[in-house]
Length: 122
Image (cartoon, rainbow, N blue to C red):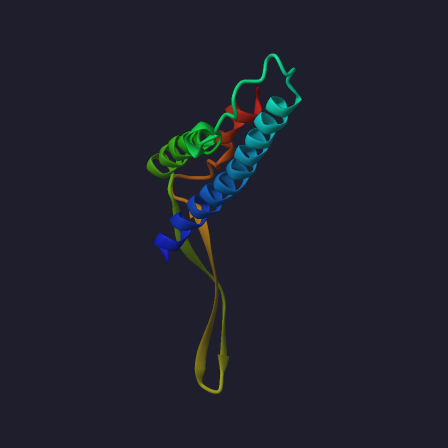
């Protein structure tokens, strides 16, 4: 269960960055195509080729920043699975234990906002 708690924010965050990074890369590619087609005929060069490598920084830069934030978060305050007993009852000579399990920070209540706050502060 601890591995699942640690994997959820990583998978969610990396998936989000890849999704929106690829949309930004496609938008950048489209901008370059439109800019080259709207240029003056004297400024137009031969047909230029837009490669995947040219637009990859739109995905790689946010992915590297995301990896740094996630690594810092995982090393300093990883999520751990904690189960808390909610109550006990007796039914037909059987003890029924109600419990609640959730993912909580291991070192207290420091949340991800401690790491994301500086990004949103600008």
